Length: 483
Image 1: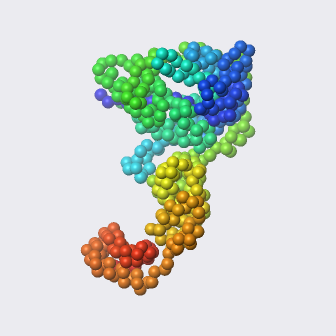
Image 2: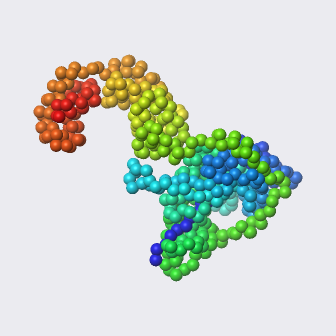
Image 3: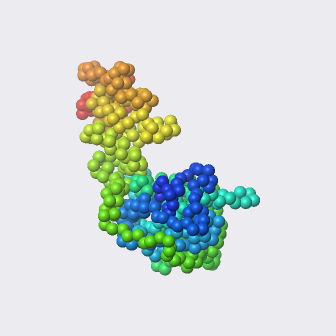
């Protein structure tokens, strides 16, 4: 029997704000344990929560980017549970009136080849709601210690419909969602810092069946790759249980990405186990049209929308756009350089950026913001080559110096005497005739229709010219002589 997996993801995203959700104490990562606390965070008697409007702005903006319906009124609820990481023994969250409903995340599945765009799908969302994060338990050999620095940080929960069917779809979903949150300035989404966390609900059913199977929740998936691997492992485990005649138990399981194994943590709670009720200390929030319009104006162009525009507007290949659009700073850099370089030069800009600048940045262990090569540098280099003022084989020498010093390429060319000198037409033609005579087989193959054969003739010409002939002139002269 063939089985189909049904997967829903619950993604928690820490919102990037200066202060916590219901108090003015600072929010952040990397501080000494229990230094980002105050009486509200520690739930001391008599304290009252006050809502952080910047956090609500962020979740509304996220909802608008994902096409959600923004509720005109949302309210706050208490989610009751008893655990050391929650000083209050409840969490302030949203239950039956979340701020965002509906919406979708666009994903792209791998194409048949890495240089071809894959299938695009829209994965529907159930809801997005806002809540406060809990503290962090640090486990040691004989005891556990709790750090409340994270407690109270604004946390957005994004719940998908059970509309994913493979581990690769889940990977694509998280990649797309993470990029959207970073694009919008909602969160840095660093999973190592706990800024993005994912729980996966997985069930299987016979192909053709419409009823959902018993779901199992996977916890502690602390990288996007581990989410993919954990889901693949759980699908295989559930199919094995069915094929042995067993029954799937609704439970929460812990997945260890290092060993690739999972183990049961507890039977799964139901919503009524949390005894939700409206928080008596917080008023409902009304979101009017003006509020939404202000945040809509701040929403950026999303990665896939940008990619489609780049493909159409700049006529650059998918291999370049698929690198550029996932980093907003990188794509902004590209657009600035492409406009400075001038019409018809966008692909050359993209090639230098993706193949050379990113390689040098990686080797130098720096980042784009710190690189001395700025868009005007790259644009001028592309123009010099395109206008025949700098030979392509010397352009990389100029680029290396430009990367190291931040000097403009024209200044380097002038100082080093690298400007391309016009080649005597008669001398170039003789070099081409000599190359054809020396390699008659390559000449014959080219005449017979083998386009790549001309490359065997270009090498001897460039050698005769000591590397200083214009490749475009060499190509044109050879083609004329071989016609």
